[in-house]
Length: 179
Image (tube, rainbow, N blue to C red; front, side, top):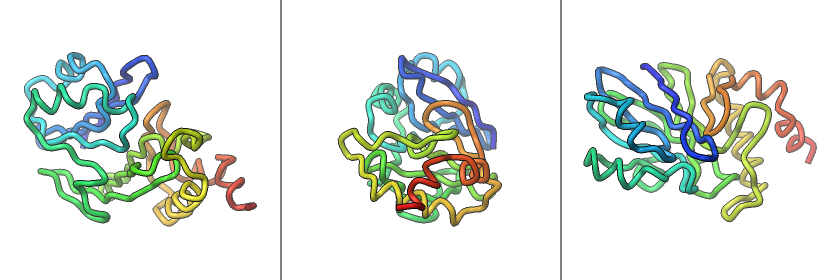
């Protein structure tokens, strides 16, 4: 699976284009629909996946959905556990804390996870916005520890990291353990 990261919009949101067998799954089209379409080119888009519904992750959603005429996949349309969208097989994991509708998407074969604003390199998503909850965040972080440490984490903002790196160095893993 090929992963292309586009940093879009004024808040520099990571929009990911996953490609497999010349088919594309879009993750979090924050803004800049023309740029996203240009990058996709003539490849077939099979769906748009939303990690959570904050404005900076869905700014281009309506335009791209209308243009490509594809379904939107989110916490409401995916089942917890294994899902299949065209050639893409992934696990949907509810990871509330930053927002109640936040999901992480784990591609076991590729050992990659897309986490929206759940976790960042050395940090976690804010919990002071509507839908945020520190108790949910604590449970989500605990859930994440059950996955293979080699996983590469692709966040909604900033650079990718690994689960191992975050468990060892992210201060929020330690802060919640001490509560």
